[in-house]
Image 1 (cartoon, rainbow, N blue to C red):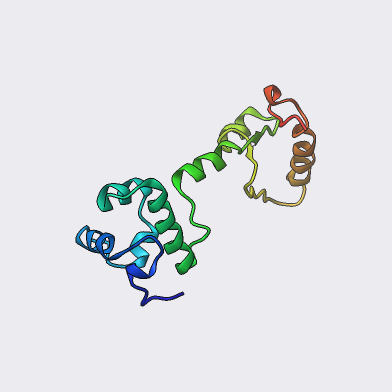
Image 2: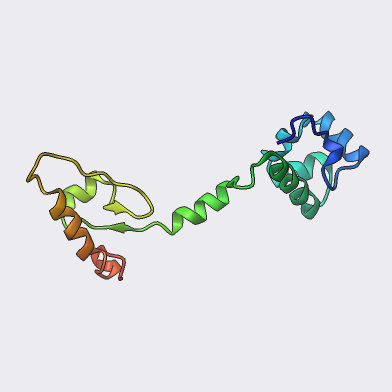
Length: 136
C-alpha cells in the first residue's frame, strides 16, 4: 500500500482533473477509493468509464479490491433464502426462519433439542419454496 501516492499517479488523472478533484475536496487516493461513480462524474466532469477506471485504480492501489457497493450488497442479499424450522413461533423469532449464507447458533442444555433442530432443518431445506424450504 502506497500512502504517498499523488492523484496524478492514477491512470486517467491528468493535471486538470487532479486540480478539479482537489478543489472539490478529494486530496488523496484514499478519498477516491470511497467515492461513488456518480459523485466523481459530477465533480470532475468526466465520463462514466473514466470515473470507474479512476476509482478502480485507487481501490486496487490501496488494497480495497474487495470493496462492495450498496448495489452489490443488495444483489447478494437477494440471493439469501430462509428455511422454516417447522415452528411458526421459532420462525418469527428468527426473522422468517433460518437464514442461508449466515451462521445461526443453537445452544442449550443436554437434551434441549439442538440436534433435533439440525436434523429437521436438513429435511426442511428439501421442501418446495412455498412450504418454507429451498426446493433442494
